Image (cartoon, rainbow, N blue to C red; front, side, top):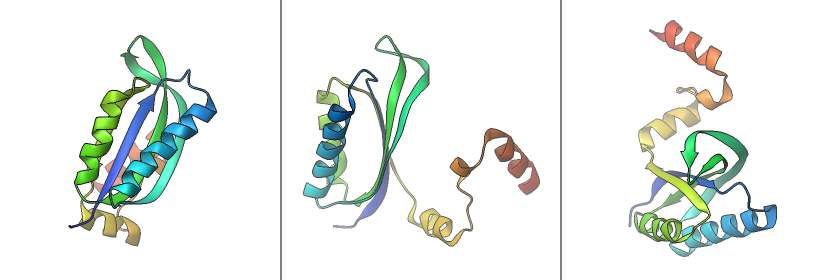
Length: 127
């Protein structure tokens, strides 16, 4: 099957201790690799205030996954996310391979490296 690139971000209950967070991350990584995928990056962004309350929580612990897999892994991790009471929200996005190659070549700027002020300046400069 054709391998695609995906990004998944989950927001989990901030009350979980670090040991439980690591167990959850390892479980998700195992689901991805057992489905024939390969993990490229896992990044724990930490506890952040959310724009609105989810399940009566103002804060969430954010975790980012970047991986390569076929489409079957999306169903597998989606099922696990729905059954896990500690996951407040999740979002999985299939990445455009052409855009990823351009980003790797440096033709597309990764705005996560800049603050909001710099993003506005860059948009105006490129307009």
